Image 1 (spheres, rainbow, N blue to C red):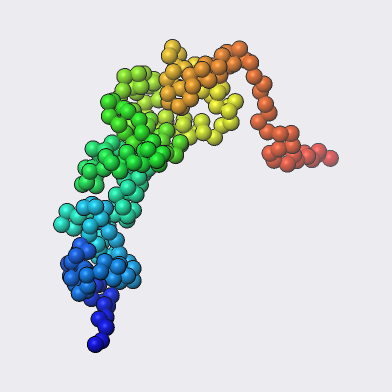
Image 2: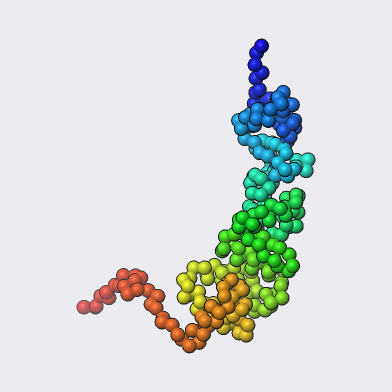
Length: 254
């Protein structure tokens, strides 16, 4: 009796006809009762599992027509270029402009994401803050998180952190983001003095507002502000002696 030969061609043809399929459907197509036989054949193809329906469905990369967000849906089944639901949730939060709540991400992915987000938060793979009574998830990377939190708070217009309270010169999101970028390039002493200078611009309550904007301690801002007022610092040379352009001797007229 000849051994049964399971060919990848059969599996590929079945997926091309049906677009997506469950493990049971793929086993029936191959004529086998063994999951591993199907997996061996799938590995010969460029395949993906769904991030919805607990990864129950399979397709091939050549079939999936991913949109600009990296998602593809067929018969309400979702596939992602990022793979699993956990990986997809993490990637969407990290790439978001102002973080994402569980409800916002659910609307995008068309699947419940609370457990996945909570798991990522507990593993410290995502940051979480409560804003306007709602848990919002942000990137774990400090610089990206600061920008996301800033834009989220502006959007929510929380009391104590409204655009109006920050002064007319800071109303634009881009300007505040630029302040954070510039602040990140300074050393510790320069950051303290810069924070103090921005606090002086805002006047009363400036220490706490700048501290919240830059996510630093308000006492650090106050110290920098006091150093500026007392001129309690040494002004260092911006350029070292001999730096810049090479000096050129002027020729005297004969």
